[in-house]
Image (spheres, rainbow, N blue to C red):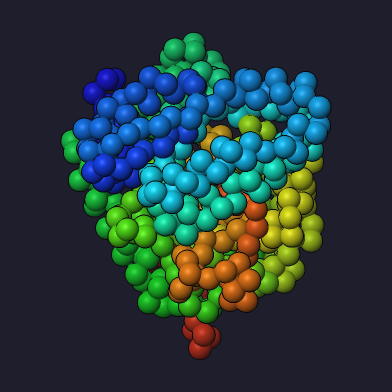
Length: 407
């Protein structure tokens, strides 16, 4: 286990963040991940980092606040903290975010409290988020099991056994068991890059998603850019923002989404589950919302601002992927979004349109991109998903057939 943890940490530091000599690494992690964070810090120093700064989260303490604090508390942001993150980003720090919290932790919390807290935090961190949305700095999201998350997936096992099983699935998804995971990731990125190049060379006008539960046409803006695997930051350093990752993605035309879609995986949003939901779109905007679980939470998410009523990302992921082949639902978006085609509510990545990283929000909107305080991925892929792309001359090309790449 120790050897695999070290290989995993090396992957995150080297392939994920690509830490540079004398760079600051900022780690945001749940307190349950402290042991692994120490391994990451050691690896970062070995790679030449000058300093490692860690921000720990106590989700149980957050629950205490949600259940007991006055509502006004969720309208107040710790601006000094947001300013600190912005300063570290301006000094070219690299940022590692570790997930792994209990998907059901906030199930008894008033959705309005969660929505208000998320909105307040998003507003305070808006300047910092520009650095990650525009890929000005290197950043990476990864995961470490917590006892409650592991037990959610493996409820019939002891906590210790459940954690062991979840680590195994995380290692499989990240190719940690390969003889040289760094080389395996290099080959994987090369494969994703080939898909990206095909899609960018074709500059399709629209995509038609069709399955038993989804019938949706998504137009793409002029000069859209597909991305996948990794990208270069402002300092020309290559990094991989999600580990694992199986997706290639771009932005939709904000007002060009019509039809309906249905989720195929549960969405863990701020430790509240939203499941079996259906969204109907007209000219890009959501006009109807249904959900078997978490309807009020979903409605609050969509009402964050005007932009959260629209889509900001369209991502293609084959059904036959290492993550999906683990045979489990992770109840964690980092993994589940990389086991399934997905979309995102809210902000588009400016880098998904030519010159977008230099544009203002107003200029992005004029080009057809969506802007918002939020960006939340949700999964709609399935084994019967077919996607047909249409070129500007009307030619149709099938790019997904029965859940997998058709080219």
